Image (cartoon, rainbow, N blue to C red; front, side, top):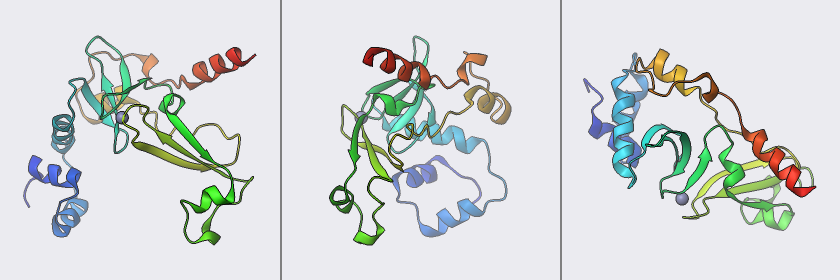
Length: 188
Ligand SMILES: [Zn+2]
């Protein structure tokens, strides 16, 4: 396997890659930049919308550059969760499991269940396609876990050598508190 071509990356994304090829990928001494661009191309070809994918967050979510400006979190179904600096979970549907019976529906065997009152399970879903986007097990009242706030400007400039056209120091700032502060004000 001399080069990591696009077809191999497609197999990796689809989960059809052979065990041998996957093992070889992991063992490659030097990971070439081209692989990232090919990966983005493969991802872009799988979605129906045209906003440019900057980074994949998980199985369904991407940070995309909007054609009219802005960087937002977008589901593969097309649903947008807003500016990527705000934790997308604040705009998701959330199901919270609190009791032992509710835990037992998703944990097996029962002794593996978290302790009710000490822990809760939060499941996050897309409001449009209902795909499950994330699950977190945390103490009740714990803030929504912001899984990833990437420094996209630095990544594209320093690591990939292709700076983004809309670079700004404002991009690498967590804005989640703006939303929770607005909730707080509305609840008073
Ligand atoms: Zn969706």
